[in-house]
Image (cartoon, rainbow, N blue to C red):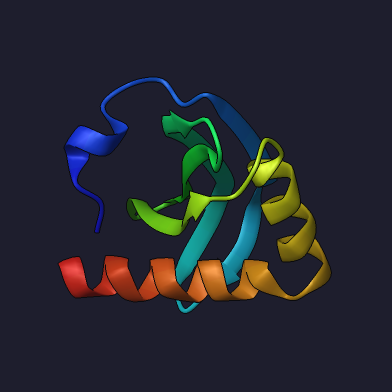
Length: 105
């Protein structure tokens, strides 16, 4: 899970990947999946240090997890979205989130 201090502000950018409410996985109805970008610091040589989280909202709660972090350049979130949409990444986010929610219960 994420240290809450790292995400206790509005994200710098948000991209919604799914917003339907009719996708089901292992008894969970997935309502919405978003990726959230938090730029944590800037380096003159390396650029932005980005924390990208996935926020999955279901009918049984929500879970936010770290998806990626590091010096990923100015287009970190857009590159991540492109990778996810082209490489079955949504399935992995959904499965990780369902497992996390199941372990809470």
